[in-house]
Length: 418
Length: 119
Ligand SMILES: Cc1cc2nc3c(=O)[nH]c(=O)nc-3n(C[C@H](O)[C@H](O)[C@H](O)COP(=O)(O)OP(=O)(O)OC[C@H]3O[C@@H](n4cnc5c(N)ncnc54)[C@H](O)[C@@H]3O)c2cc1C
Ligand code: SF4
Image (cartoon, rainbow over all chains, first blue to last red; front, side):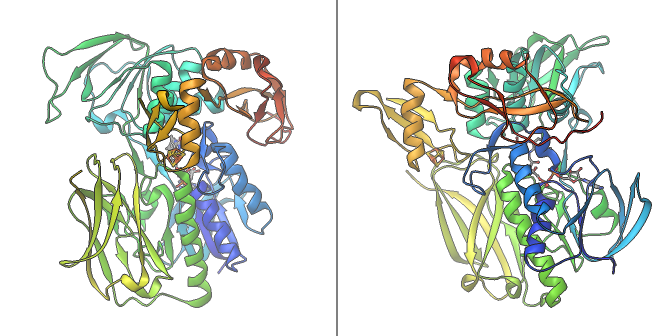
């Protein structure tokens, strides 16, 4: 064995996982990162609002990443940047490529998958119209502006109201661009409420809910975008068209976990999250292979990524130092009404320390509501919420003593009468 | 009575602020929300984040922020002011890149470390 633990990806997930594994006693840990620096997507998220949970302070993305990079410097964790991981096998041989080592294969006792996610592109949502230039994903435009220093356009329409699109609406406005509209297919925004307020309303940028882009015109560069209102089935309503003269269309239409490596090594996947199925300690279906962060499910807050990833790092250390977790008894977690996924998908009570945190998303907007956890037909826990929306990840904590010894747990959301 | 969404943390509480009653805030889950609600009606402030030109590094832009929030109406002018600022590596997170932004008394600081390197 060359390393006790190899972490694939040096974003916030990989950094927190490696740090936690070191704290729990592992000494031969390697992080592999394909970018030229550690920190992942946080390097381009220069706005603030990170770290309120984790550091009790409002930090920018680079500051948040910087904290973890400093913490790691004080450890003996090894990191290779500019290093692309090409393959991982079930017996944990990791093959990678970089300018210094060339092509190399190293063997690990445990592996943590922390490859993050990428943005959905125009192809993935098939917008009609011309194939001209001037159409970017919001994250690409963010990278161009914040890392390279190029503003991608002057008159902008944004399709999708995910957080990255909202953040870019403000950012491009501050840099002198005119953001004409933010257009959202659903009747509610996909981003956090605070971003609607401080990125759109602060700058009088109109948000068109229940609208979509129905035409794109442009010979070489984009010239005009037409939007239309949609009906309850999300079909454009004829006669509602309005056009904007613009040179740029940003797409902020969701993120997809980056799981080519996971699929290639035959890790069992969850079709709801597009990420690996994980147990209570973030272990995947392949023993000794763990996963955390956006590669498992798309997070909106990096604080939760760090927390989840620390658990993965601790579990990997325990696996190396104490051996595997007893497979029985086993609980499976399933969607109840109005819930679109849960993480973890499986719980081995033997692997639970004191409690288990269940993350999930609801599939519509709720006012006053309750979250119900049932074991079979029996309700075992009930949590109150004032407000829930698909754009905001929810979580509940179940104490170990409450867990049944097997069977199915369901999580559902229900309205309560005011 | 004004209805606001608190932007201090991601929870996004729905606040109600009563102008008649000394800007009393309800609907907040913590004291920071009460402070935000009152300020938002009296003199709204925001933290500005942006980048400035960077020399002496493999990277071209250095991310920055205002150390304290500034008046909301200054945001566009403040961002424009930063266009003229250049910093040279090495840069440490927290270094002041522009002091007393637009006479507000607020400093603009770097938010990332850059060692000195060739481009
Ligand atoms: C464009 C964009 C903008 C975002 N903006 C915000 C925001 O404003 N606020 C917020 O809270 N959240 C934001 N998010 C969500 C944010 O990504 C997460 O909160 C958090 O950064 C996820 O951490 P991660 O480590 O799982 O993923 P990442 O930060 O994406 O890190 C994954 C790392 O793995 C590396 N990697 C992937 N594949 C390989 C491979 N084969 N070999 C080697 N390395 C590999 C990548 O280069 C990357 O550095 C954004 C996400 C995206 C995609
Ligand atoms: S009131 Fe407190 S908890 Fe609620 S959004 Fe504001 S800061 Fe967050």
